[in-house]
Length: 179
Image (cartoon, rainbow, N blue to C red):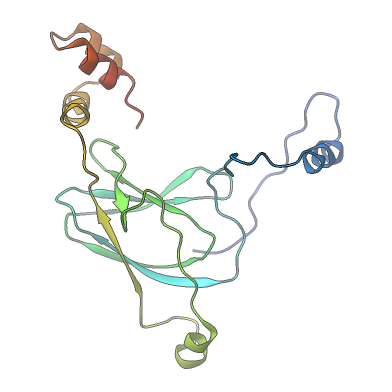
């Protein structure tokens, strides 16, 4: 994966110069509980990882690009692994290929690679023979959540849940399921 600058430029608001918009953003102090958007940041610190699918499901391996969009890199079959060279500030997420359900990686929803130490570069060069193992697993779902996943995967449109003869709380969970 090449570490290149993102394509495109800042969007202009009506009648404003992009430089004025940047200055205004810099003057506003960050809010204490405000989270930064999930996206990759330019980095030169390499990391070598091995994604290991410990589920019985096919898993989409998704890189979060520079603008926060998920980019599919690989679909791992059950029990498979995938070696990738990445960068420290590049987040990765994992989804069930069939249902789109969030999967965990090392017990969290977002994986941030660890850096390769300079000693490793001196010994092994740009590609390390040792990779950081990253384990993909299924979170513990409630019965309601799992039922919504199964029923929702059978529907062409989640709003069709309201036409089924099922409990109302299951209808709303299916209809509001965010994939």
